Image 1 (cartoon, rainbow, N blue to C red):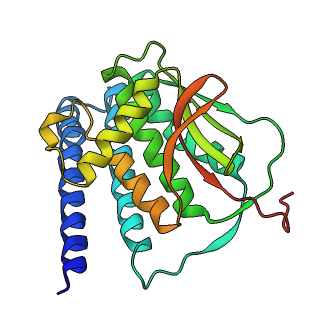
Image 2 (image 1 turned 180 degrees about the vertical axis):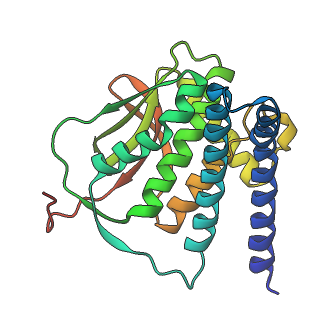
Length: 236
């Protein structure tokens, strides 16, 4: 086995380990609430469902990212509406956002040409990113528990991002998520969330030759990804 392949295999194993560590907490919550839940206790059962679905979504997105980074994977490129993807991603995350007391907003103004992308991979990346930011907000002392899913024209194309009013929230979680990805920090040094959603988003975007970066929009701080519009196609 070549050195590059060994390193790749090791990083994949580390990634799976960190994700498994992060999933311990939600599955522990599932077990505890499941023990106390009854047919009459709909709130308990709903919480179990929300936590379980978010944990399983992270696993699904992780496996998709691994698949997309394999040479044998054939990306399904199609014209994609960024506002539509942001809308769908925010809707997927509303149940877990409600659990953490985080308000989700959609900020889309103007018209945007579609981009050529793998829609499933792009949406999975934004959902994973949003999940990580939602879970990090209460733990990192955000003044307002709200996030905005927004798009705007940037220097490098159309930017799709998730934003809040806490500068350190986006910078810290991106930095720590990537430190964790490359094994430079142990899991136990991170509070509340290991940043696994950032790792998954990075993996998915890397497979599409895209990059997650710190971004600003409308006075807010966040993380975004820039994509080139296709002027030959327009979505109705």
